[in-house]
Image (cartoon, rainbow, N blue to C red):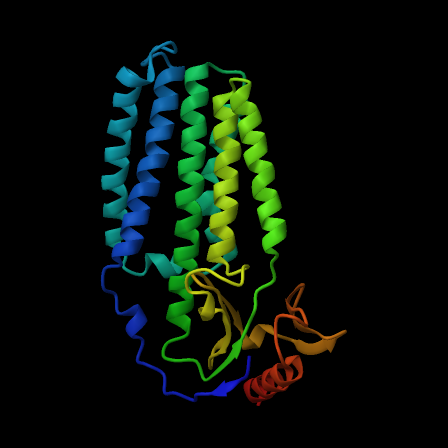
Length: 290
């Protein structure tokens, strides 16, 4: 976990060349398809266009499939209009949160006292929109960070994100037990929800590098760029501009970077030498203010 002075020249912005972002377009297409398909199918069922008692294999499935295809095409078209859309969506936490917000509507539909057919569509739509919306928000955030931090980092520090394998495993076991209990009582939709939550918890633990093993685990770093600090996880990155950091200090071995009403914290076990990182941060802040 030592700091490395790389001092590499910045690239000329090749991460924001304006070329089509295939990964982003694919996720937008799936997200838009799932969103429109869920809305169209629920609307058709509630308005009587698809009778509430219709089986899933039939008019309901056709409505969902048509909605998904139209939504997918619309998503591809939308993401192709503006090549800078990923970084625009990833610029602020509020914009990224808005991508998963539609899932709240489907949860409300599921909890409402409606027909069982509507419940099935609402549950599947909640899972699909929440999963793809989360992936889309993280991907957009990564694209924004790539845009504001071109080139290689000038300094890097090994970082061990906080986490507990035992706690995560215990929570997953709890979700699995709840899912099995609901399945045994015949409540398959509730069982699906709990099992999905458990799978999402495991996937998120790996994606954020909270475990000491897993793919890309060695990529967890704190990186210093000319524009700011990046907390790099195996698959996600977050950015803190230097001009937003008002004060840096050690408190009981914990490194705290104040940024207005919020702060960035690193526990004593996350960094091998917090004092050295603090000195490097202070140098950056002094240089930024001069």
